[in-house]
Image (cartoon, rainbow, N blue to C red; front, side, top):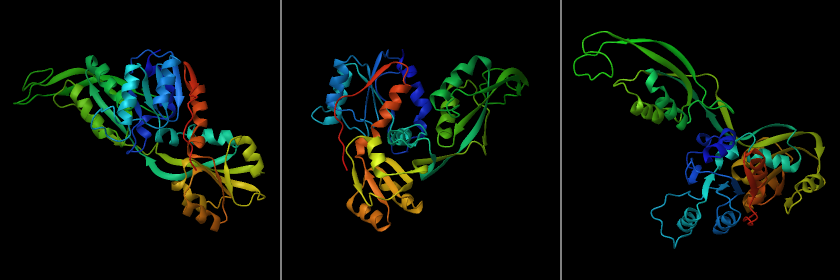
Length: 356
């Protein structure tokens, strides 16, 4: 199966264009046309992970944390990241990463953590608001012979994504009219004469963030000197983005019940006998969710790691804390991805770094 088809369900769950602007997600090494038979899932791409992938004949590694995060100035293999990249290329192992887009996904990191704790079926709402994603409708008039070129650019640029559906498009056939003036070089028609031609009206959805650069790319493949492209702001959909979640438990739980569901090492601070009716969770670093855990007056904050002064703040607010370790709190999402992917996949046995 082609790599692009292997990661298609992952891209539907966590579209790359939903990642934070500072992040670097998507295909890091390889080619979307590579043939993939087996996938290795990991939190981090290390030399050991690439070696494991090679031994297990996995042509693709899917990681949560991107291996290429900061800009590279060279591929000097005396440095770690270039050395890992060179190993992957030599071993013909592709690398794909889903990071903050997977953190934000409704079925992503925080859903997986809730499932691991046995609370995923309780009523929840977002924890950390990150604004909302606005969309525009793009209407593009295209001669029939150029439709495939234009739609390819649209799909490659993330247009046409509505929930778990992509390539969403409405197409109408009609007749366009124009008159080329002096100094023009028309694709069809004659200067000074009215021209009527068959055209397709293409309507699709594009995010506010993507549309300026995407429209410029459309213009490059559009055969007209002056393509007609209309952009309309949409009231719907306007999707709010949240990191983490707050759960209101239908049946109060206890620390012992949560620790039993978790089944791994954890650190607890607070009143162990307190009934837990509302909890907040945020996989990885919990710093950004701190004030929202306090505002929601939760009984317990479950996260990967916090610093000393943040723990003091929660103690003063009367909120208990369950620290699972940064890597450990994100690891459950690998099981979700394993269930999602359409080819054989397994979770790396290379130990990940967990910090509190």
